Length: 616
Image (tube, rainbow, N blue to C red):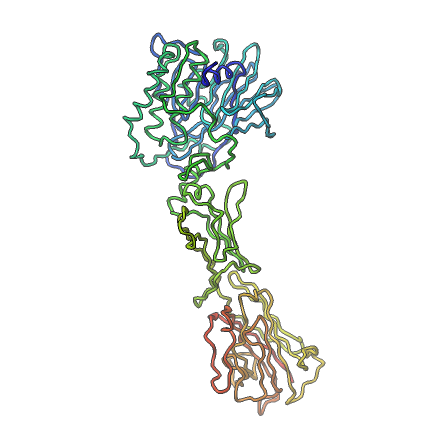
């Protein structure tokens, strides 16, 4: 029976392996230092080590066919192997994960010119042919001359072009390109010369942001001496039997350089050993034997079939298992401002806030247990980008508290998880409040003649946009409106209705604060006769009656018609309206016998004044 690792690599050699991933070109705007990738820091194979026609890309490291090593320090796309005369190219995409200053192989693409087709091997074992997602299995399938398959170890593919067979393998962290025959002169790319980093970078668009260099704070928890000792296991049993065929030095350097700067999580330690073991089995007849002392499991693709968004990568969660965590460049601004969400989105009668799903994963917060003040109001996750949105509106307030500070109406709610009824909890107590502030409407004044039948004022102030209408009637049912042909005699009962549209009746009530008459069109002119004061009928005029004041978005009052003594001129009626945030019945004035005082209420500091005129 073959050893599991030997079996894996034998299958890889026979069926071939190709890793292809979608190309990502960043569009971030933060610029710190323009990246100039050094062509130094190369590891040359020592004399006596056999050259191998296998190229390994693992983490940020490229180890070419001759065993030279060079790290990729940015987040760009590079040509790994190409021959324009043969019509093919293999290129690799690099992205950051937990740190901005360490890049990792994120995917590989095989591009053929005839036929014009691209195979993208992506994270999670996904494979796309151009824009079509493929469903693969270990039995494989042949598409446009490319044989491609997938099993628990990763994705494998091979293609024969001009009698040259190219095998590719990709497991989400490591790609290996193997050629059966020696490298031919016309082929180019990093797999031919790892030192050609600067010349093999592909300019797939006009943006150079992928070259931006970052410098994150060092991880002081990393013991580099211990890491180096661990990586040097490649010179010990069971790997030393392969050292004469595959020089372990570039693999050791790739391992130590990466893990001295980046935490040893997400199975990285084992990925470097697996990469060497695969290369060894492909190029040597030596048996590795039992290499489990390295404390690694059998080779397996990491996060197989786990789909993350473009701003995420699949990694180990603090609670165990794997999940979609935020890439460091994307998460940087959120972490600097110590926030887990986008800014609150506020509209006239609604509000919403969106939490960053990958930040919640990183904190170990289960979004499904979070809720607003009303426990029935839960967040909705976008399955494409994993953002979680909580919202309220006029039809479902979700426990939103509505307050007023004199100049603004404030809608306040909170996202929380506080399950005090359980004996224990493994979720952190979570609380994040958010608010929407709306400016109170400004004062509006309009005067008109009765010949126009009614007056309508449009009020626009900040987020508020509503109308106020005042109309006079001759009957209590408000069915016969006054118009220019209607005659009004002294001491005749008149009913006046004040209505608004565009306001949320569940939140706002309209209070007629005062109404008064003048003989001129200016509300401040003299003489002045009061009909309503402080929301109540003026006790000096027993004909005045007020109905529904402060109870909704409309109200009305009535009085007996009059004229100013010694004047046969016009009568102008003015009313001042106040918006009130409803708190129980507090918006209705207290007009009980005697006191005629206002209830305490949350009122606008800027009322609207509307005027109506009768002409003789």
